[in-house]
Image 1 (tube, rainbow, N blue to C red):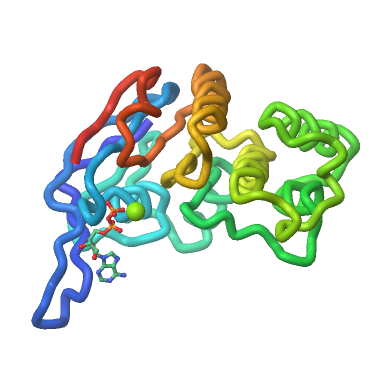
Image 2: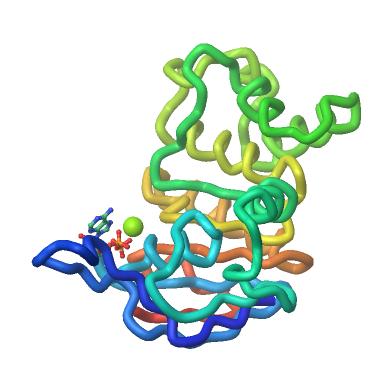
Amino acid sequence: MFQVKNLNLIYDVDKEEKVCAVNDVTLTLPDTGLIGIIGPSGSGKSSLMYCLSTLKTPTDGSIVYNGTDYRDMARGELECLRREQFGFVFQHHFLIGYMNVMDNVMVAAKETTAETRERAKELLMGLRIKETEFKKKPKQLSGGQRQRCAIARALINTPKVLFADEPTASLDHENAFRVMQYLKEYAKEHLVLVITHDHSILEGADRVIEI
Ligand code: ADP
Ligand code: MG
């Protein structure tokens, strides 16, 4: 569970032209559910997600995750938290070019057991990537397949929290809908935060935060 209080993120604090990307945000997020964060381009959605996921340090304010304030955690502890409990889908897929689909998912796995391989297979197939495509390299895939492969990679360790920044941006409507159905199912037992500027993909969300 997240408790965010008076959160601010200012870029270029030391420069003349400061950018206040996150402005005094206070909110509470539950342990499970699909939460949408919606707003126009430049409204600070990604910046808020970077703070919540420890990728950026806020300029001011506090984020308490399961009872611990990020400010009280050492860098190594934050790294552990990210690795053990968080999953990430970014706007860009960031797949590794020389690895095939299966290896791109497995490279993020904590263990490389037969069970993990089975889980990778299930995830990929659940996201509609066929077994015949497992050996393909990212450049042999469509934009949508790459993004779905990145989603499978983000879920391989069954993260407690999935941070997804515009996960459906490169998908057609049908695939976007399927991915959202999949995330909705995952959100029954985990927290899924989806950033978007498209209202239509958040129809099934438990809560929508507008910024
Ligand atoms: P969104 O994800 O909603 O499009 P962002 O969080 O990316 O918004 O950006 C919010 C604001 O912060 C924008 O005005 C953007 O130009 C600015 N910004 C984002 N990243 C940086 C950065 N690294 N340095 C300076 N300004 C930034
Ligand atoms: Mg963004």
